Amino acid sequence: METKQFKAESKRLLDLMINSIYTHREIFLRELISNASDAIDKLYYRALNEGISGLSRDDFEIDINIDKDARTLTISDNGCGMTYDELENNLGTIANSGSLKFKQENTKDEKNENDDIDIIGQFGVGFYSAFMVSADVTVISKAYSSDEAWRWHSEGVDGYTIEPAQKDGHGTTIILKIKDNTDEENYDEFLDSYRIQGLVKKYSDYIRYPIKMPVTKSRVKNEPKDENSAPEYENYTEIETLNSMVPIWKKAKSEVTQDDYNRFYKDKFFDFEDPIKVIHSSTEGTSTYNALLFIPSHAPYNYYTREYEKGLQLYASGVMIMEKCADLLPDYFSFVKGLVDSQDLSLNISREMLQHDRQLKIIASRLEKKIKSELLQMLRSDREKYEQFYKAFGLQLKYGLYSDYGMHKDVLSDLVMFISSFDKKYVTLEEYVSRMKEEQKYIYFISAETIERAEHLPQTELLKEKGYEVLYLTDDVDEFALQMLGTYNEKQFKNAASGDLELESEDEKKENEKLAEENKELLDAMKEALDGLVVSVKLSTRLKTHPVCLSSEGEISIEMEKVLNSMPTDQKVQAQRVLEINASHPVFAKLSELAKTDKEKLKVYSELLYDQALLIEGLPLRDPVEFSNRMCELMK
Ligand code: ADP
Image (tube, rainbow, N blue to C red):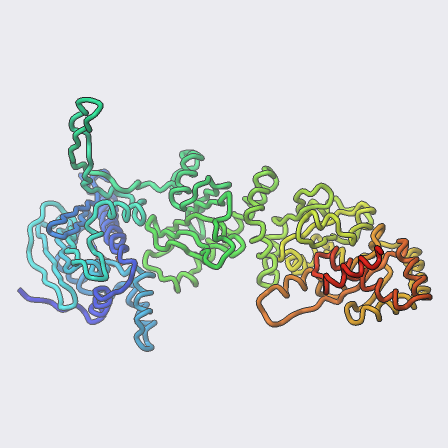
């Protein structure tokens, strides 16, 4: 019998498969099953179009058989089958396969083993992937309406043979002789029915035709005779359908219960809690797809770490082609789990090609809008739920505001919330603006480690007296996010601890300027005493009862300084600090007096006040021992 040679390029790919060190060999099963399903599709549509009678949809199936002794795994279908020429053309060459074309275009440079591995992963290279796990492969096929059957056989790169064979019905049977285990590799797993069941569930659950396999089970043969003896068991074999066939996302919403969704989610995405939101949508038109998305009710333990990988499962016409397609989700919605199934995507599309795929971009942008609108709806109709969501993932939304130079503010500014000084509850920016006082110019905020601390910061005293709401920021990213946002509804954000709050009337302003002029000598003396620690000492326009506070001038606030300097870079920044004194506090009178009588004491008092301001701010004292000594000195 003549041994035929594979076409050169097929040989290369085959070589790649046989010697592959690719770890996801298991995908071969997905490839063979999806070929089988395609073959059934072909015949089924031919039957529909040509009006062939006697072919019922219900008769189609894919069978899997394991023979451990012979080390064979067999996959059969009763689809269209292949003629001699088709066997020759389809399995002797893969020139038609998109994967190889891509490979040729991309391997003009030197051959790189890693590229090869990537290609296997990305394409799943079809029929030849069988050689990743097989010592030899036999294909017995009989084309529909032909009475000849053929046996194709190959042990790899050396070529293949085709000879006449016997086969009852039409269709294709593929027999894989599974490789022997090696020191490094375990191939026996592909002869384990439990493992095969798992692989079918994982990759091919939604194939539209039943995938059947004999499964050995155990049952009680004889009930125990008495309490002390065990029952007698016996094994029996039952043909089981391994796949569920109709994917939940293809079902009408009315057919699926909340419980179904929840179970599916927990099963598929390994969560122990129900999702907080299920988004099930299907669209037709410029792109046709079904999407089933879930918002988890809590952040995964590794969510805010580098290990966390975002992405949705991607299916092409019911066949999973990618476990985590990152391009389908923007970073700020990276918490979303789920899947997309589209008939507009090709099964063999590579990761690189996907990134530029127009359909995928359209889908991604629709999903983004959908997620946003669902979140907004949750915010409006179920506040409690939204707050639970926000506690888990709000931080990510705020990172989103800040990232990419604020490019996503339109999507995100309505979704973020901060704690309000009014009731210590979450407030959205929209709500804040809607309840601003008539004369109020700005959206005020203040940063602190905790809400309790923010609550006691003296810088907001006057704001609060005027009845203005203040946003309490407690996450590192908050100020940066608001700075990136710049305005909301044309209202500017203003840090209550920075710059001029513009709270005074014209008259008050004049009054203050006059007072500052009168006390110029004192303020200058204090600044000098604080030698370089502050850029100026000022009469405060934000304090009411407290004697002092720190504020800042310019772009960088004291909070930003803290955050930036805690990052592992050499570059340190310094906020321009201002020590503010409350002119109506009794301490001020004392300072005025000292300015005239005791410059030395004024210096000590200035430093003490500065240290107090640091303490209030939650900043470390320059010298805590010195500070406490001075306090004791005063007490004596
Ligand atoms: P692809 O499926 O991407 O075209 P494959 O290498 O997996 O590439 O398969 C090559 C061709 O062989 C298929 O296009 C199909 O025509 C044929 N083929 C493979 N498996 C079967 C099968 N079970 N029944 C009929 N034809 C098949």
